[in-house]
Length: 292
Length: 154
Image (cartoon, rainbow over all chains, first blue to last red):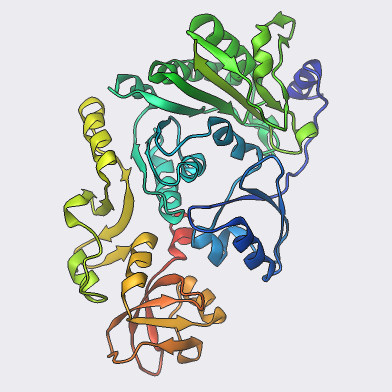
C-alpha cells in the first residue's frame, strides 16, 4: 500500500481516489442565488445547493464548460471546490473589518472575503508568486471586487506593517492532496511534506503578530498530512499566545489529538479535518485561532 | 489613445473622480480613500506599490485602451452608443469574433463607420466594445470582449 494511504489508515481513515463533483460559489456582489440558478437552468445546467456552504452549489449537470460560460465571464460565479469555500465562512469577515489574506492567489478566497464584506472595509492581500498574479487580477476584476489592496511580496512581511487586522486568513502553501491532483502520490514524499512546515510556521507566526486583540485568524490547508495541520496547530498552542475556537462547521471531523502515538492538546479537536472518503470533498483542514 | 479619448467616444459625462486614479505601469485603478491610506502606510514598510488596488479601470497604452468589466458596466449605465446582440452573436463576440448584421437585434441611431459602441446582450449586460464597420466582411469589428478573461490565462 502507498505510504500515504498507510498513514491515513493509521490516523483512522481508509482513503481511495475518486473524482469530486464540480462546484461554484455564487457571487452575491453581482447576482442572487435564485437568479443564477434559474438562468443556468434555462441553459440545461442543474445546480444543487451545498447545504454547508452559504453561497455554494454543486454542478450536477451541464451541457457545456461552465467556467467559460457568459455568466462566468460576467463574474456571476466562481468555480470553487466545496471545502475551499469554508475557510472564509469560518473567518466571517464584516463590512467594517480590515482583513489580511496572506497567500492570496489565484484570488478565490480573497474575492469571497470581499463578497462577505459587501465590498466595504479593506482587504490587504499578499502573494509572493509572480506567476499567479495574472489570475488574481483577472478574478478580482471579473468578480467586481473593489476593496482589495494586493502586494506581490512574501506574507511574512505582514509582520513589518504598522497595521493590525480584525481577521487574518492564512491559506498556507501546502503539499496538496490526492483528490485535487491525480498524480499526487507519485510526486510527494513524507520528507518533502515535512519541509513545508517551517514556511507554514513562519507564516502563522507573522499572521498572529498582526492580529488585533479580539481578532480571528483562520488557518487552512488542502493537505491531509498532520505535520501541516494538527501538529502545526499544536505547536502554535504551545509557542504562541493563542487558543482555538470551534469552527461550527456542519461538515468534517474533529482534529486529530493522537498523531502516530504523539498526544496533542485536547483543544486541537476544535479544528476541522476533511477526510475525502467521509466528506466527498477534497482533503482539507481548517483551524480558527484567537489571541488568549 | 488615452483614457479620456476613449471615454469621449461614449459619453461626455464624468464617470469617476480622476484624482482618485492610481496608475501601476499601464494599469489604471480607481482607489477609495480607505484603501489609499492602507496603501500609503504599507508602502513605507514594504517598499513597493500594490499590483492591484480598488476598482480596476483598465489598461492604457499609447495605441489602445482596454476597458475593465467594471468600466464597461459604468459606460453601459450612461452611454446610448450600443448594439444589442442575440444569443448566437453574444457567444461569437465573446469568442473574439466580429459581428454580422444578422446577430444585431438593435442598434443605436446616428452612428457612423468607425464609431465605437458598446456591445450588450439581450439582458443589457456588457460583452465588450465594437467598432462599426459596415462593409461586405463584417458589420461590427471586435475591439475588446469579455472572453479575454479566459484567453489571457490560457
